[in-house]
Amino acid sequence: MLEVRGLHKVYDSHGRRVEAIGELTFTVDDGRFACVVGPSGCGKTTLLRCIAGLLPPTGGEVWVQGSQVTGPPSGLAVVFQEYGRSLFPWLRVRDNVELPLRAAGLPRARRRELATEALAAVGLSDAHRAYPWQLSGGMQQRVAIARAVAYQPQVLLMDEPFAAVDAQTRADLEDLIRSVWRRLGVTLLFVTHDIDEAVYLGERVIVLSAAPTRIREDLAIDLPVERDQLATRSDPRFTDLRAHIYAQIQKTRHPAPQEELS
Amino acid sequence: MTKLPGWQGLQRVALVLGLPAVLVVVWWFASADSDHLVFRPLSEILVAFRETWLGPRLVEDVLPSLSRLARGYAASVVLGVGLGVLVGWSRTLRALLEPVLELLRAIPPPALIPLIGLFAGLGDSRRIVIIIAGCVWPILLNTVEGVRAVDEVLADTCRSYRVRGLTRLRQLVLRSASPQIMTGARQALAIGIILMVISELRGTVHGIGFSVEQFQTSFRYPEMWSGVLLLGLLGVALALLFRLADSWILGWYHGLRASNRER
Image (cartoon, rainbow over all chains, first blue to last red; front, side, top):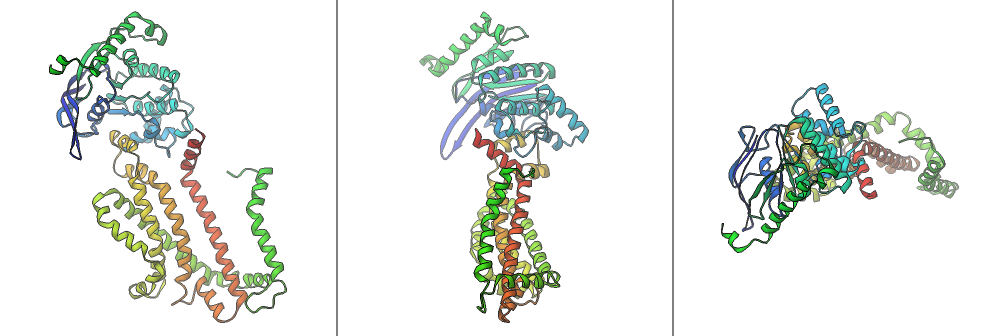
């Protein structure tokens, strides 16, 4: 389970004080899939880094699997947006996937087994021996996902992982993430600026306001569990939800005066 | 890497060896009738080469020189990389040491030879210390730069996957600094060869540098030339060895750069 309680983050550098996150409180229960969407510059990445224990919050608490986050928690994996920079260019694909397992002290045979399974799960069974830079962008992001899967996390964070790949690859990767999530039963928090993606992927969409960030709306996505790029995206309910979120985000970017007070 | 040499391979070999071959031929014929005391015919120099360096001197002079170079160079790599990782890692240490390091690096190592003689004695250790005194700086300073330039996303990846300690040092810090470390090591190798010779000019009766000096003062010019030739050949051989090591250690880096150029 993932709990964010009264999270508050202020950047204070060279006398310039920027309030990135005003106040955020939400919970994602075990095995649920939540998307976080918001206007650009609303502190999505800040939120994710606070949850991952990579950035200390100014106020509030983050709890992962019942313990408070003070540094990177065990049982939590992150897939970063910059796949090209989050894979080790000097390690082959398999060694990239195995590195966190090696650091965790797993025996060689077990590492091999987990890496092979994870690479098969993302459709890269025949790329073990390649270097990341020999692969396309979409395949590199699959390697990063395989690394997260092999790590067997209870909580998986994804920071706009598909922002830098082309549309077709992106659709494939979205379906891949849905299937990985359903198979692993992992708690997934997926940050994106793409409203369609958030609605298509999540069971729930948390809509953020512009900075200083608050929760604008916490919306359940009542679409069927089986999602399909064609059928789901042309479902009238899908269109309603995305229009609703779009309107919310438009409002937060140009807030009416009385909303400023609340 | 070594495929059967096709037409392109032959062309490359011709390109690489062409100019040296021409120069040797020109040298051969231009010097053939020379009766100048210093500029002896190449044929004479080659005979001197075989008689001088392929005899007992190989063991008495060449190997001791190369062994001192190897020991001094290896110590420089260990010291330079070790200190470089520490200094690159700690901001405090860097602020404290960087001005001093820049100053020490600016001193030409030959100027230190009398000083080093004072405390390192007159034996092998003195000459090895001289080699270290010159070789360590490019390795150290390049390692510091390399360690400082570790990619933030990779560092975050290591933190969030709890890759720490020695695994982190080996798999993140050293590997990502390795292109800069190799740049420093390449500069250090050239400096090391120079210092190997200079360190033997005084206070020893063995070594290639000593022999060349001795041949010159005893008017044995063909032998002197053959020593210069030997140093040149050793330089080329060491550079080739270095390239082998480079392509083994930095294969990923050259591939990455080539694939970035294509995109």
